[in-house]
Image (tube, rainbow, N blue to C red; front, side, top):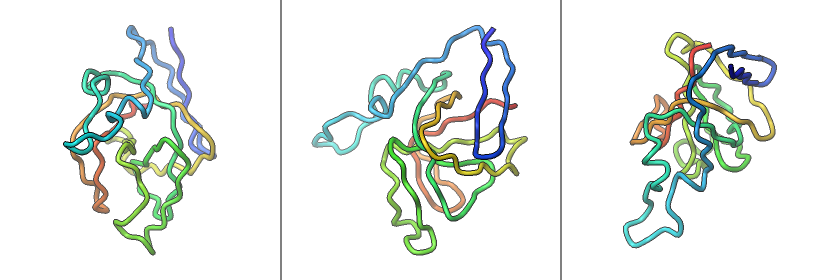
Length: 145
């Protein structure tokens, strides 16, 4: 039996769930091909193979002025967004992952947690535009707690 625990700032969310399949560990380097080629940014083969699969991803919770309920961004490096000054011209890298809570937890707001965090969820790949107009190519759907 595998036990999972996620920490979001001052709120601890515990997941006590038996899983039959171990998640595949992905890194941000697996998400996009490097170097960028003549066709621009391309999704990496390991990420493509993990579409719809259970994965683990370690990254940094993006610090945001606007706390959006039900979601937050994870990036390969610590980032602080200044939505009021920058609007859609933010510093999110192309590999930023939109982390989404279960729809039943859409009203939850995650407090910023400094330092790297390890998340586990279902990887979805494809263009997704959030309610603020930010576009992500990678989404991580967290399990229900």
